[in-house]
Image 1 (tube, rainbow, N blue to C red):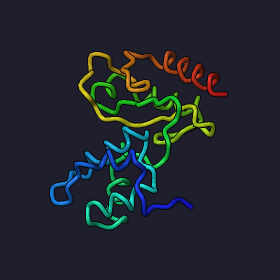
Image 2 (cartoon, helix red, strand yellow):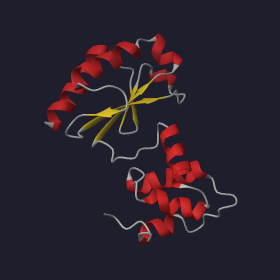
Image 3 (cartoon, rainbow, N blue to C red):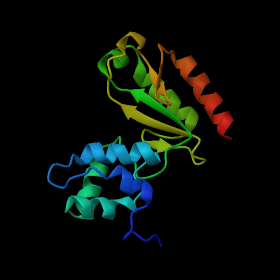
Length: 159
């Protein structure tokens, strides 16, 4: 069992400037996730203590925001854009094709954690619609057949 009464030195550094009275919880969760790739569950009680709140309040915020993860991310992350421009240009068909080829749904990862499929909102890169973000990099415009090819390559790479 992990000792949650002591902060790892890295976490102490991440939380060093955190003041309970004016803490921005979401920014702090993003900071932790940026450092670890996710919010390790053992950091929740430490963060709750620093913010003078309960672990349940921290957990509630984490589970409310879909971009905050409690598990390590997949090696390769595909983010499917659900924005209006992408949808008008057929992104729903791309999403369905990705789900079929990878055998997962949105907000899931393949069993081997090689590929994760996530939903993102429009970030204004509409000139590339329909697009995916592959490990954060915009990729588009994509056809359904190009998305299928990409998914197959990633799946084979992971197997």
